[in-house]
Image 1 (cartoon, helix red, strand yellow):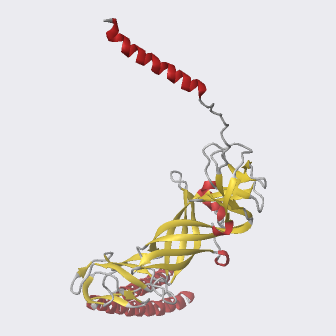
Image 2 (spheres, helix red, strand yellow):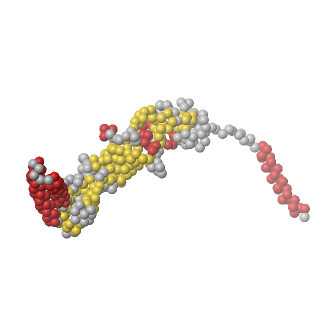
Image 3 (tube, helix red, strand yellow):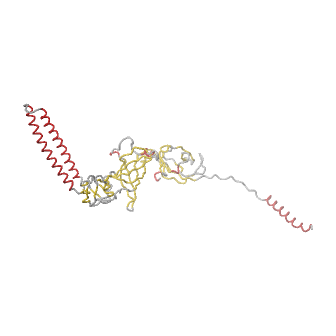
Length: 386
């Protein structure tokens, strides 16, 4: 029985002895300290320059002037101008619509006849009064008869003034049978046809002018600091702020030039926006190959702002969460520098202080960044290319 288990035990024991011997006589492992890893970073060479700011806004093109064409007299429509269709163009003074004028011709003749009668009554009253006045001076008639003649003269003069007013109104009503365009413009919509009866005060068409187009541009109140505008006075034409409008039109990206002519003067308490009004002259007659600036077009506006000197432009990746930037010193050490931020726009930050001209700014994000940490600049980005 013992011989049965003796063999395996001897084999196991021999293996253990050999393993211990190998470990004891093996070479020793030399522990070496980990090598310092210097992070490689991308840097930007700061360049102080004069920067002209701009503010971007969006809006819809609208006419400066729009109104309803209203019938000022009643009657049947006898003619409608060819331009009286949706989108039709017209010039100031064009006759857009004519109303039957027979009744108004008759009314004018009656008013003129009434005027002639009143003039005749006045002539007779003046002659009668003159005779009564002479008789009164010679005591041939009583004072009451003189007063009656004077009263008749006053009534005749009043009747003449009323007759003149009636003639003037009849002439005006006759003139109003022709609806004339008040300005150069375009028809937005029309609601009248020949033979239709229209009432006094009825709107027959919606018109808008084409001398100027306007775009209402909402701008944040903090962006007003970068625009040469005043909320306390009117914008003079000589110092109007230029604006470039952009929009896709007819399959191409187009541009139009405008200028800020006024501000609405009120700050929206909910959105903190103030509305600037950009104006374009002759939107349907643009110079060169520029297409017309159509009413209703949605445009992006770049408002040209003021100039600022001594500004360093850096990408947003250069700014740390603490409001500082990492400056790489000449000996390749990382220095945390507090800076003065003038403005943030998208991926660009404008610095007005804290970084000197020619210094290298770290653009790479380091997982663990420490003051004085050694870094290895990989490449330097020219600030003018950002």
